[in-house]
Image 1: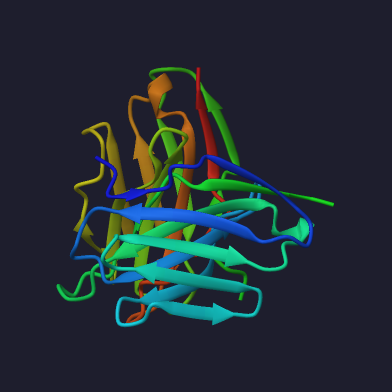
Image 2: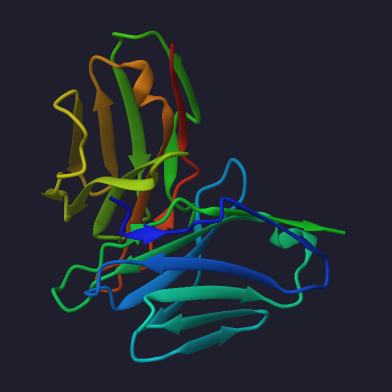
Length: 114
Length: 114
């Protein structure tokens, strides 16, 4: 049973437009959320994170929004660039029990067209 | 730092053969993780170590899988005997203590079992 769900396997966006990647989770104990980016033939790299005490975290062109009541988070990329084309993994972890080990979703493949 | 180093990058073997995947974590990182990536399940945690000691191996799919960490700079994941359903990309990751919510991944080993 997937505790972290990325229901869109792929997303195609025009360069300069906004990319919105979505993620849902089922475990109410999750209180820390991360996004990783993965290029072909490389390992995932950490992109941005958010704690459950916040509802928004911004880093340059990347913003993550958290809606705790809906158990939903999203990653916004504005403006999108061709170099953003990659697979994006959503991950969630529980800090209260001392175990920070993240649980990952299946990933969403983003393609940004020039 | 060279980052997390995995070998081999690609492994093609026949069903029933033994497969050994290798990982060198980032120096000074106390946590080491083995993940498997498949289309169906995304990134699954197989096992993780803290200070060379296995902490949680509940993700190891079967007794055919085993992992060791004989010292702080080396870990192996062994599959014996291998089966076609083991075909996947296997990632090793490490992280410092504390803060192991952000993992540093290697480039992965693409395993194909024929």
